[in-house]
Each structure stands twice: as structure tokens, then as C-alpha cells.
Length: 86
Image (tube, rainbow, N blue to C red; front, side, top):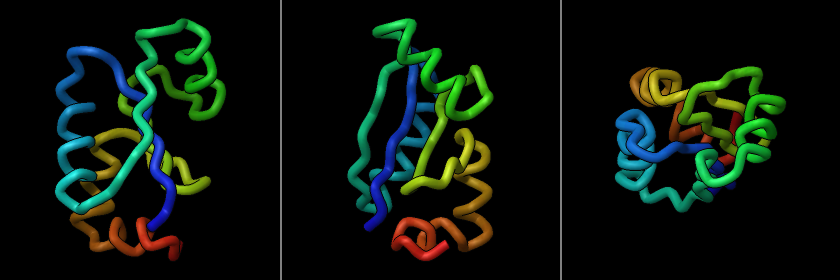
């Protein structure tokens, strides 16, 4: 299973939904709360070019946010990416 990292924020419904989808697929992930430290939010912005959460990485691949994750799942490509096959 590929390494998954998700940048999240408190009280973020999209973050909760993304984590729920990953958990339902049996994925262990590292959650990084950008509300804890402004430097972490800046790191996320530098890595992704986006300011919104969640921001999801599967391996070295930046998936994007919740809607991007759901789109990958609906297209049948999420499981393949999670298995490390891009």
C-alpha cells in the first residue's frame, strides 16, 4: 500500500469526508493539521500551490483535494494508485 499523507484543518467537512473514504478503503494515512502551525500551512501551499484543505498525497503524487479523491475513486483509479501503480 502506498504512503498517504493528508493535510487537514479543524472543522473541515471535506477533510472528514476524505479521511472517511480512505479509512473505508483500509488505508493508513498521516494526517497533518495545518491549523496547528502556520509554517505547516505554508509548507502545504508551497508543495501544492493550493491554500485549501484537504490536500492529499499518495506516494509522491499530489492527488488534490476531496473532490479530486472522489473523482479518482469513481473512475476506478484510486485503488490502483493506492497499490503504488500509477
